[in-house]
Image (cartoon, rainbow over all chains, first blue to last red; front, side, top):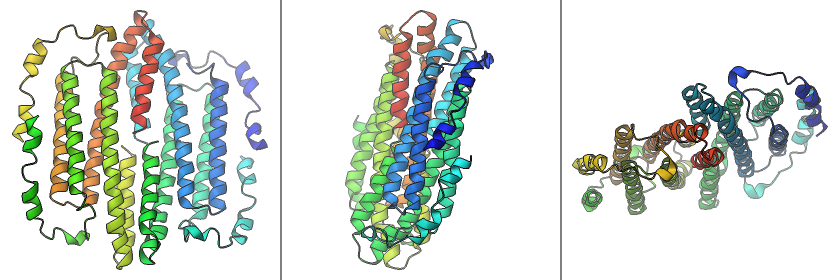
Length: 118
Length: 118
Length: 118
Length: 118
């Protein structure tokens, strides 16, 4: 429980040091939603830890599988939100300011393909 | 890092207290693979924590999505192994010893359906 | 349109010639549901033909994608039903009559894995 | 077999009548790939008809499931290509010419979500 907090000791530092980052990639779309993303991921981390408890306590397989499906769904939902922001910012940016739109779209489509195949 | 170990302080206790568990559900198939399962889940937990670091450090969205796909795949693979053991033990048990096979199969199929829909 | 019917002229003939089939595989579980399965598949075939019409008539991409998702869902649902019957009959049979249960379960799990990865 | 051809009698007519279509939706991205898309869909239609034959001939369930997975994968792959063209044209168009980009991106993300959930 307190371990989760331990992982977050640096958010302020991270924000402070938010140097122009990798702008070869253009503006990252998810900056503003950062806190929401981290909250989601911590919740998923908690679900995974819950799965460990379930295995440890010999919970019935089917109930574990149900929980695995919930975690997978949560991860997919996180990915979808990230993707939406990416399309809104990075891809749109390339389209508006003459970036390499085709490469951006191909890259995004490949990422979607990887999501579909899992 | 050390936090992961903190979550495992009780495995021995858990094994000791492994009372007949919920035998309404029949023999749980995954007992022997317990250590392997826990190891897998801890690795997935590490991946989720890695995702938090990536978000925190403003890593490029597409690279985060790739890591999400890897975690989802790892979860699905864990689910598949659990399901295989379940079929081998619980379902087969019902078939061999006159359990309610139809109910077991329906239950397993529903779990697979939930896995597919995520 | 009439082509769909053309594909169904032989169901009776097929039933008549239903020789013992490949019993190395044991009793096929889906025999009784055959008509239902064929009906489902013909409906899916109709959906795919509908997709061709949509592409042909320049329907908006997103609407086509929605229809593709419906077809994929219908295929997955068909697969799930087939799998349920398979588990009920073939796998259970192996468990009850001393067949190679482990091989059957491994085979079914691999099929589920292929379904998940698509 | 010949039924597949029967479905294609009108492509020329369809092209001829390719009036401006629904431009409320903006330029459809997939026009140029139309022939390729139709070819893909006809191949998938053939796979679905192959599935009917397999069920009709009492082919082993697992082999049918393998074929279902192949068809699902083909449908997903078709969807991905459609989506890529959509992003390249419609979404990019909205970004470049001041269309309702946010609505377009949200719409595309929802479509991806539907693909993921099947």
